[in-house]
Amino acid sequence: MPKQLQGRNIIVTGAGNATGIGAGLANGLAERGANVTVADINEEAARKTAGDIAAKHGVKTIAVKVDVVNRAEVQAMIKRTVDAFGQLDAMFNNAGIIEHATFLEMTEKSWRKLMDVNGMGVMIGIQEAAKQMIAQGKGGKIINTSSIASKQSYPAFAHYCASKWAVAALSQAAARQFAEHKINVNCMGPGVVKTTMWDQLDREFIDKGLTKEPDQAITEFSVGIPLGRYSIPRDIVGIAAFLASPDSDYMTGQNILCDGGMVMM
Ligand code: NAD
Image (cartoon, rainbow, N blue to C red; front, side, top):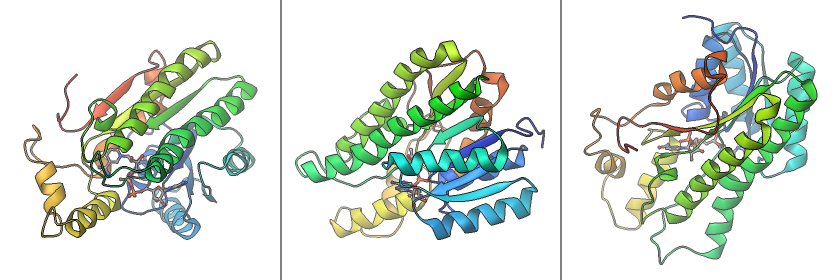
């Protein structure tokens, strides 16, 4: 594996859950030589994932407990990263949550919860990473996990879609704002990825009587994906590594989907 990220110091939020996209990214980035901060609201999971990555790839890792909606915790996460590795080169604002709700089922409470974590969490993450990168004076990469739901909206997840359109909007504005500091801000958007997020959705579909069996919801949602299957976290690593590397230095404000061709635009 070419070490295109050798010596780069990278934070990935939402990286605790071993089967999640964040842990997949953290592993893939470490495989390419990066030191990684594994950040998650679940501290125990973050520790386990960070330990596994260090043992497997021989890079430096730290585990940090962070709630991405808590600015003080995000600031502390960045400080701990800089203390441990020397500087921050790339930040993946990846933590996110979902909930099934038809348009008429959506409530103010669920709207606020999703917009807080998926929208405001990314806002705070971009701001705090940018402040650190500006202070360092060497540019940097900020990569936000969007979704196919940032390009098309689905009736079972309108609040989730709105939060992912917010991620794309924040990324564009930040890209323009921080370009003079050579900070690139881009999004990468997965399609359907088999993680605990979809396990949760599958349960919600069953609880509402919309499906009958485990994995039925993800299977039905994946019908017609041009590349013939739903994805796994590893499928997203290539675009993530590219966006964190100097190869993407002339790219900013983009929202690239890596979704097997589900959405083409
Ligand atoms: P997941 O549920 O498997 O993992 C999410 C991780 O984020 C967990 O480890 C969780 O503990 C952590 N987390 C949740 N709230 C947090 C908070 N407030 N602060 C810090 N950490 C928090 O989900 P996933 O499928 O790996 O999703 C990761 C990202 O990818 C999310 O932004 C999601 O919206 C996006 N995404 C997922 C899919 C998919 O099909 N799974 C598709 C498109 C986009």
